[in-house]
Structure formats: C-alpha cells, structure tokens
Length: 331
Image (cartoon, rainbow, N blue to C red; front, top):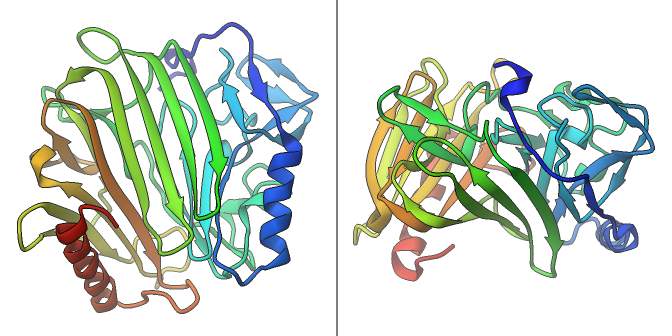
C-alpha cells in the first residue's frame, strides 16, 4: 500500500489540548493504583514539523481532540503508539488512527496504569517485552480484533479507511467508563461516500470494549471480526434465546513468548447479523444493511495477573457473557 493512497484531507490541524484535565485523570488513577479504573488517551507531537509523511522533532502532548492533518498516515511518528488508547486494570487496546483502522492489544503484566508511559522512550519500544507488558497482537493488514470496515464480497476483502475526507477523534474519561469517538467524513469504498461515527467504550471492570457505529446512510457490508492466525481454530457460540452470538479464537497467537496463549472474541447481536465469512486474513462478521449497530470485543492474555490463562477458563468466561447479553442485551 503506497502512502499516497491514504487521503485524509482537512484544513489545518485541530488540537484541543486541555492538558490539565488529562493530567488530572492520570494523577487521580496513580493516587489509588490498585483501585478499578478506566482510561482513554490520545497523544500527539507538538513543536516539530512535517517532512512529507513524517513528523520530525517535537514532543508528545496529551490532547482530548484532534482532526488529522493531510500528511498523516501509518508510521508518521506523529501520534504516540499510532492511535487512540483504551485501558483498565486488566488490559489495554489501541486503535490505529490511519487508513489501517485496526484494533491492537497491549498485554499487561501489572494492574496499574501503563498507557501514559507507553511509547515515551522510543516510538516503537512497546513492541519489546517490558515489566509492564507489551504489544502482543500482530494485526497485519487486517482490522485486528473488533475493529470495523466494509466487506467487499467481490474481492473477498475487508476494506478499511484508505479514502476519507477528514477524520476527527476525541477521548473522554468519566467515573466508571472511558471512551473514544471517531468521526470519518466522506468515507469512500464503493457507491456514494458516507460519514461514520464510532464510539469505543472501556469500563472499569473486565476486558471488553463496547463499539457503537452510526452511519449517515444505510449501507451493506459493514463488518467486524478477528485477525485469522494460521493453525488457530475458530469457535462460535449462540445464546440460548438466540439474541447474541460470538466468534472467538484461542491459542499461541501473540508476538510475545512462543508458549503464550491469547484469547480474542467478538460478541454480535443476531438481529443485525447477515453472514459469516473467513477471508485469507480475517474471521469476519458481516452485518445486515444498516445505519447503526453495537457489539463488543475483548482479548485475554495468559500473562495477565490472575487472568484467564487456560482455554477452558476463557470459553467459560465467554459463555457467561453470552448469558448476560441474552438477558440484558448489554454487558
């Protein structure tokens, strides 16, 4: 993929940097490190300059809102760890804020806040094992776990966000939950361009993230899924009253130790479900023609303290969640 294929066009750069508010959230969590917390983060460079598609110089500053500049693409070194971060005591995720739009997993060996320090000591330092953990998922050219795109049936491919007029992202931290909203204006795949707004919410409990997608017009092919790792089998589950389903994988599918175990899952409402397909790289849940849909995704790493470190415990946890969704329609 050539960098010039990704076209995010905007007039200037919007940086809403209520730094004191973001700093107070970090300080509040660090004062009670063992207490349950949720955290959403967005950190970009200031004080440097663009040289083509690279941002040179500058230092990272936490911001609450940004409209991506025209020059920004993957590996621009402009956004710390390349996207939005979502974290609680058990796990952390990032969603790439570029054409890839993949969701990645940061496995945690500790139950304290880590995202505020990730990537501060080198742009890609989080790829390596550290006392806090590391980036553990190789999403490649897929949507990773639980992100979203549009399934191209003709080419058997999940289309991401290569052509967008502009993208604006915002993070919000509240008492019991934290979330990011991303608005993609003029998303072009096939047919007419549309606008899509997503909200990704992490809570101060458990490992799951809720995803709410809202579109300006009804489209077919809206989808989510899980990266397909070679030799890792896919499992599916359906709730008793057939209101919700899940797809999941479990096994040696991390970038950490060879013997590592990682479970990943997506929960989806059956009323919105169209079909399931596996491309060469992605286990894909395709939704019916729609303007909005909500679903959940999660990861569970075997090195997580007091975590789900066996396949049986992972699937027992998924089945319990399926029962809750069947009864309450939410986790």
